[in-house]
Length: 278
Image (cartoon, rainbow, N blue to C red; front, side, top):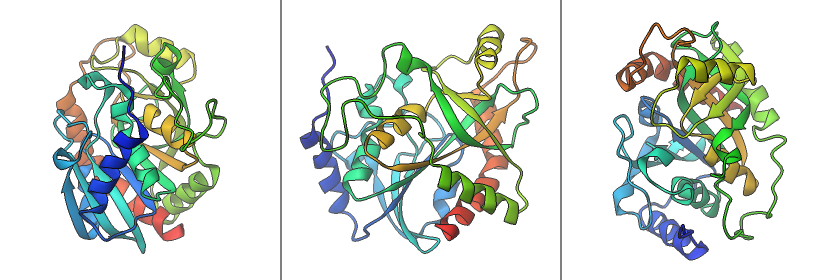
């Protein structure tokens, strides 16, 4: 039986973070594969290796450094998680989503979550940005919802609403920022799978049939936990590879990281634009 994280476990990590910074961030960010360069925008950061934080899961995936960057960005105090952990690394859903609950206990109200995602929509190309309008929590539907276990009433209700998982006002800010910076911003539905194997062509055709535009192995658990705690969420996917609906091309993690070099500058511009408007 899984051992669930308690409020005490979470607050141990919270106090450890507080002991390493004098900042009081109100905006949190989680950076996906190949997008860690966005953290370089943070001014005068306190850099905290997550390896020194109690109960914090260690990232084992290339492209995820495992740092907290806490400082100023766009006239806001921010906490940036440079490198997330994933369910497929062998962690529980509680461990994977611990950073979000720590952010909430630190007073963060707005979460900007990014990821590298594979295209399902054939019109998408590597390097595109997609604002997430909704998600399909496929692994949550199959018994791996991060809220399974004792409810932590200090965060939210036993049965939280997910009808507006992605904040409409934040989405409007992203649209406006993209327009001002002449960035093409697609909008679509993200579907979260457990990974770590990439999808078969039959998988992708199924996912397309049920309404998904992009697919990845993260984000959805974090967003569920954030919304449970009443946080406002903006989700942005960087499209890292074309839809392989016919099985004629292979997908690799190296390809995902390479695409991050193209996506990261656009992601920086978009995030800065959103923060300016907050």
